[in-house]
Structures are given as structure tokens and as C-alpha cells.
Length: 481
Image (spheres, rainbow, N blue to C red):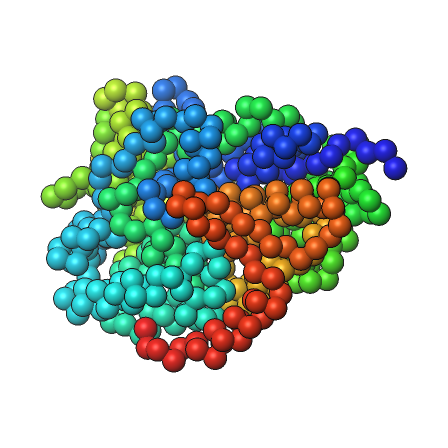
């Protein structure tokens, strides 16, 4: 049967754009369909009146972002456009900000932790260092943490670690609930990314990578895909009421959206899609007539507000300290992060109510905020970040070993690594699988991803993974973390 395209890509986030860019380079006819009017997904940036306002992702790192850096070099993005963030992260406790979170000096200064909490943090970090090779963020189902939740991991240590480190970090950066989120992805990301001294941002906005990836690709924004059906030798998509056929489709949208669009997935894929839940995220940008920030002895780029002290906000980002080019000279920009615990009451609330409630509460941490604000923008993501639950973690190895097929997937939920690096890793896996599907018989996926060090990250074959899974389950929890 004649088809319209070699490959249809659904979603123009960094995963979809990396898939399309790679397959186009390989000589395939590729088209990307995106429901929004812009590219970037959760790495989009609003460029407004001299302000560069990130609607989703906030930073990358020198460590743990190998594929991201490979893409940036390939696309010719100069290092000057990806500067270091010169300021640190603080934790609010007992009426003031404590600097040093995720920084080596935090063990000395406290970073909001008691002495006993600092000792237990040192013990936890030493454990991660000893087991670094076993804490691969690309294979979170294989770490020594098993299926324990973040809350269960916290129970092994002084209460400070749960209340003033684990919960604020997973709540602020991922929108996760510690009681239902798996510890393995969180701990392996900590081990891979390292301290805040290596954190960077894109000078002109977090959409820099997406915009560069999209340049050579045919992207149709404002084209929502309504359904995907796999048939013999091709797939059929309904896009804006019209039918498009393709030899292969890569679905690069959040798992709940993929499950709704793909009408006839195999049963094993359906189970994993159903298990990959997402947490909503909401941010309020405050455009300021002057550069305000939380008071303290040293400037902070992020102030985390733990649920024990604050149930409406999970943190405040000082964007003009992230990089001064983000704002016009003499101005300021703050981002207020809504707490996951407040999301049920805020997600459907009108913008003016969300702005009023969050800015009123933020006045406690940044005095004078409302008087200095000239405009507010609300950013909502119903599917903000994949919440790596124990159920999803248990199914992930089987999903990774699925056979190649006409419809495939990419996105950070595929790797259970909530970051742009996780999305790019999933994209590389999808490119390998789609190339196999287009040029040869279906086979078990064995995908190698080159790194800067000449090593490889690999999705194992069925027998290898089954043996390793059995060994991991037997070893789980033998060693006290």
C-alpha cells in the first residue's frame, strides 16, 4: 500500500525532534506533528519584551548529560550559550534560607540539616559513591534500591533527610510525592548529576536545543494528532480530521497521552503505558521592575520550601541570577513553583486566583515581590514529569525488551529518567529500533548509545536482563543503605 511518509513523529519536544533530526539525516522522509503552536514541549521558552521565560525545564549539568552535550556539539551550539549558573540552591527552615543544598560545602554549612542529618547525608552520599556503577540512571530498575519509594528510603536515615532534602528536591524539581515515587530514579540521578557547581542553563532560554533540532526538520505546529492505528505494513494517523499514513510512527508525547492516542497497542506495551503516570506541574512567572531575591548571606538561584514548612509553594527560582541575559537591564524575573500537595486545588483554578495565592505566599520569602511585579504568566502542565512509581519500575525491563514494531515511543517516561537527557536517550533507542523496522526483520532490541568516553549504554537482550533481574531481586535490601 502506498504511504505518505517513511516516519511520522508525534510531538515536537526534544525527544520527537531528536528522532526526526536523526532519521532525516539517515535519508528518511520524516514529518513531525505538534498540537501546540511552538516546539520544545516542557523545554519551551516564552520570549517576551526582553524577558526569556522558561515554562518548564530549568537547567542541565556538566555531568550525567552525555547525549545532550553530543547533540549540542553536533548542532554547533557554542559553549558561551550554555553558561554555568554562578549561584547555589538554598533550603528554607525555621524562618530563613540555608544555602549549600547539593553543594560540597553543604555538609559543613548545614544546608538546613541538623548535625545528625549532615552525618546521615554523608553516609548516604558515600553509599552512592560506592555503588555508582550500580546506580545507572538509564537502567533505574537495576539499582540496589529495588522498588522502595523515596519515603521508604528516607526512613533509613535521620528524619531531616526526608523532610529537608528528599521531599523538597523531588517535590520541587519533579513534582513527585515521596510516598508513591520510586527511590531508584531519584538516587541514580543524584549520583549521575553531581553538585550544583556543574549546573548550567541556556543563555537565551531552555528552548535553545529544541529550536536547533527543529531547524532542518519538517514540523507542523498546530496539528494535533487525534488517533494512531497500527495496520499491516503501515500505520494510520488522524491529524486534524485528515488521514496520514506512514511506514513507521514514533509517539513522543507523555505516556497518558500516548495511551489515549494509540488505539491498538500490544498488551505488554499497554501495561507499561498505564503504569507510567505523570505529575502535574504549575509555575507562575513574575516579571519585576527591579531584581529582587530571597534575603540571605549569599545569593541563591533556587530556594526550596519543604512541605513541612510550606504547603502551597515548593520553591522559588531567581531567573535573573540564573543568567542576567534572561531579563532587561535593571529588571528581575522570579518563578514560583506550585507544590505537588497544592496541585489538586490549583490545577483547574483560574489564572488570577493562582497568581494571587502564590504571590501572596511568596511575599514571605521575597519581601516586596507584589509591589515590584509588572506582569505575571501562568504555565500549566497537566502531564508535567513522569512519576517513576514502583509499578512502572517493575515493568520497565520488559518494556525495554519489546520487539520492534511499526509504532514506537520516545520520551523521558520510556527511560524513567525525568530530564532532557532521559528524553534524548529514549530518542536514540527509538531511532535504532525504527531503522531496524524500516530496513530489516523485527528483532529483539539491542541498542548501543555512544558516549564521549568510547563506552556504551545498552538495552540488554531478554536472557541477559532476566538473569540480571533475578540477581538484583535476590540482592535487594541485603545491604543497609
